[in-house]
Structures are given as C-alpha cells and as structure tokens.
Length: 67
Image (cartoon, rainbow, N blue to C red):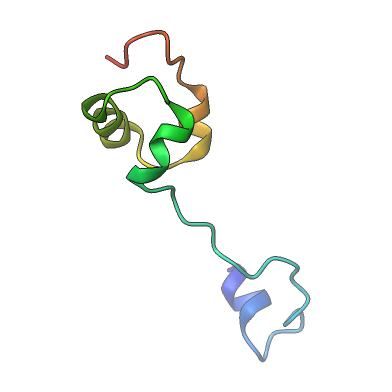
C-alpha cells in the first residue's frame, strides 16, 4: 500500500516521503559489533537464529547462552 500511495509517480503523496531507503538486515560481518566476545562459531550460530535484525540482536543477553 505504501508503495502504491507514496512512491508511485501518479500518487498524490509522491515525493513527500522523507526516507526513501529500505533498511536492509545486517550481515554476518556486523555481528562482532554486537557480540565482541563471541567466537566465530558463536557469531554464526547467533546470526543463523536471529538473522540480521538489530532489535533481535540487542535483545539477546550475551552473557547467557543462545540456546
């Protein structure tokens, strides 16, 4: 609906949005910024379970095991 009402050139709200960029999930190389004490294996496991959503990554307690 957003694309149709705001991003389409024929829409009345065209070019009135303030943030035209889609935020992409973080990638595996970004994991050490959230979990610097994790080994590479732990970082991969965490990324496999949580993906690259920053909100999910900050909600994990790094002191407690993922599983």
